[in-house]
Image 1 (spheres, rainbow, N blue to C red):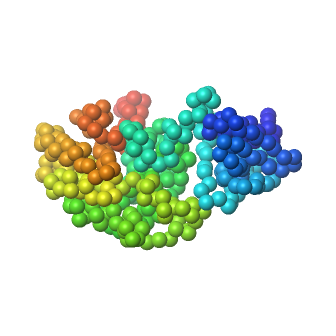
Image 2 (cartoon, rainbow, N blue to C red):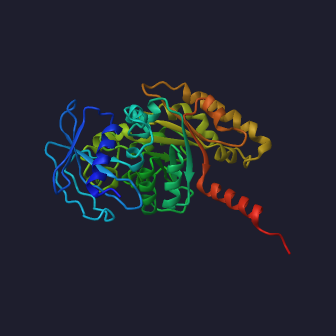
Image 3 (spheres, rainbow, N blue to C red):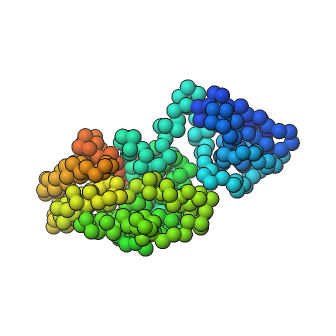
Length: 376
């Protein structure tokens, strides 16, 4: 088995390739973890702040900070003993996750790894990516982690219909982040207090339900922005969204990174959707076909689905026709009569295909039907 020093050095080399830096050099001092990755092209050094390793899992999580001088930290003699995170004095530390370090791809493809995985959900949409997501109501961190590892681009943590509180959402957001999936929190109501509590948790996006007018849309956006553009309360030094104050640039960059999604779920919302989408700060319109059906008095009746489709297509065209300097994205949830390919073809960039509870229910039912013995 590799000793601690050789494992750290192996990982540093993989890290350099991950960033596509053939001119990088790695070195390690004697006796202590004094690992520095030097980048001549950009200047400065990237310091390995904490190695964490396990006998059973060949992976390391690295917190990298750009500093003028290296930081020394002691290495445990036993590779099975994980060292804690070290607090690095950097305004914008970067977290690199295990699957990025120990990728099976070659170094030639790793040079574009960062461009393939933009730092924000909003950036991926701006690059034209079509994303496939899921809803999440169980508030089970292991299930959230599984969904991320399975490859969903984004997961909507549902505080509108799910039983979880903001405190319950935190480990789910952490699990999604660790597994490489973007997170969106859906709050129960268009309310500044709920928006503030959700945003302080640090999701990649926020989804605000039942928006029906441009005035309600402006109120929703204001709740997501700091003064003078909005009314969001500032506690940047203690919230998870700012890495508990370590990310001192958070207030300046949150507006560029946060995806603000407004849900259209009623006939009135469809009537005003163009004006809603045109409000400054609205990034994405989320179409809610089921709630729209209920608002029309159809109660999700399949025989009347064509009437819902007519309004949906009307709203979609109105959103895609909005021009306000930045593109407004379309999001929605697939139905049996409206599969993801059809939605992407109509201009959707975010399509939610399934939920965690429905996935579990389906798997459980299939298992029971297949293996449970009948009456004797």
